[in-house]
Image (cartoon, rainbow over all chains, first blue to last red):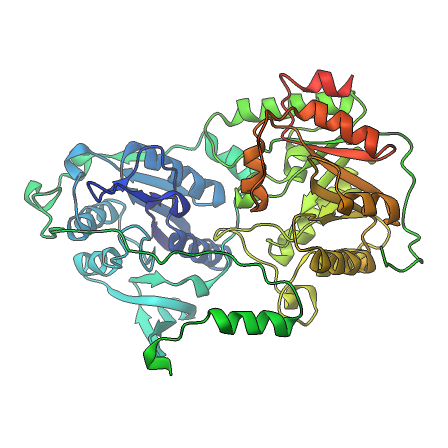
Length: 263
Length: 268
């Protein structure tokens, strides 16, 4: 089975700050990590390969430093890594990104299964996966929390929805956007990292992908962010209550200010 | 310390030794060979000086290579009872067993069992993973599990946090001792306190006092979640000597030791 996992490098969540004047993310000095949901996609791919055989390719688009994320994926056990990077790709929104990823998937010869995290924690749009499936003309399911093969060409997946869920059967090739509940991702080991040090990472620029210039970068991105502002978080404080559990419960009740609708 | 008097797993400390916590090698391929080399060099210095190396387990939730992996890959010597490996509750059951079996195979006999900080990236042990009931796995359950499944092979340490509310922390310490802890390590002690005095006087198992070796005392506040008064300059070596005088006979666990500036001064 040929599996492609799309991953994204995102700012380390704990260190994200917003410039109070420009209201932009402050990226200088901020560490980057693999988007947390993408670990679950990669774990699913590696587990499938372990049971059914095949090859796992990990694919990302980003600046050259995104190679770090790909090397971590190689350390976890991916067979091949591909980085799409070019100044011409900068400013691509989800639609343009999905277009570029679709070109890469085609250049890789397609896949039986494409896996993505359900969304990236920086943009939170959850759009790239479905848009990639649309670009490739294949079936897709989002919010996948369970998956199993019915036969070699059919998957059964459970997708989580607000207040319930769906059980879907999909014919391959298919794309899945996965939830955290799907699995417990492995943690890379030192031997894994040592193997990943010298593994090749394929780098494709616009010259290799040959995209339509009108469909990439800012020009190819219909999304316009009109404004954004940081969330106003309530002030928090820690109060230490000494005494019995009953004293603690009483103290919590004294502090509790119920909203009107809960009375 | 109101613990059962039937503690018979304790052992005598033959001489005062330092347990020296090494900075672990963080995940990543960048400069990996150089970073591994620097780790090995520090490790060998501690072993050569007859002190104990302490290897943490993803401290503060920051992913780093496991102690047993480093020992194995770097083919480092493991003299008996001279290497202590931390194990926290953020592992899959398979990984936990791999660590324990690997440590055993390498000759690591001392483990410090802590609940740990965890992160979104680290899987938390669940009660069912250890074949027990309850809501969560803490260091108490993990100590009991290792005691039961690796009976007598490892010496198991537990942590004592003197910065937590005392009644709660004492009750927890008793549970850790009853679960099978053989020794106890405090949080960094920066001055004698009644709390530490009492432990020093009454704890029925060996006590190791953690000493904060960074002059940046404000970092300690960040680590333990309390504000630490830092009026005058903090001299870690002077504080260590003062504590050694006050708590004579105790061994010390040195955190954030500066190998370039402090190592020779401390271990000579």
